[in-house]
Length: 155
Image (tube, rainbow, N blue to C red; front, side, top):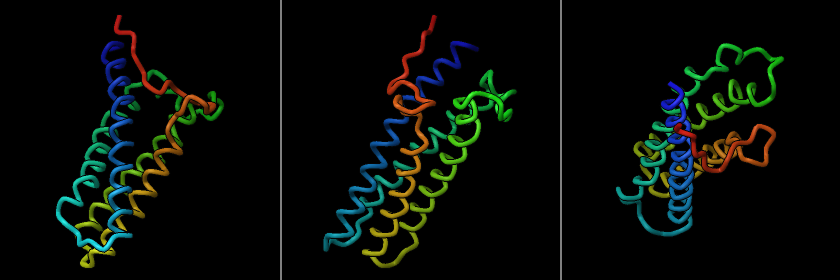
């Protein structure tokens, strides 16, 4: 189980970068469309869908890690150290909210009629989700920080 947990942590760490890249691309393409005069094309939805898909994979990995972690049985004891509280509450809640917002952005892309509105609304939603993700990521310089790229000991 320890090796499986390590592999899941490695995958979760790696997929974080995939999520960030697709999030940045979704926002960048949305901004380009918002301030350009070009019409919406089906290909414009590509990065938003990839952002949502990578978030789904990341959420699945994260939830498996969450419910299988050794600290889970003590997770909601507020006397626990800050990193435990962070991963038990703030990280999970903010990331799940970001996941919902990303999916709202995809829905907006499909259901909004005006091309300019599609670009602007999806950009706002993807941008908000990306900001939430950046805020709730355990960056190395934070009190609850982790490595930029986790390389688990598989031995």
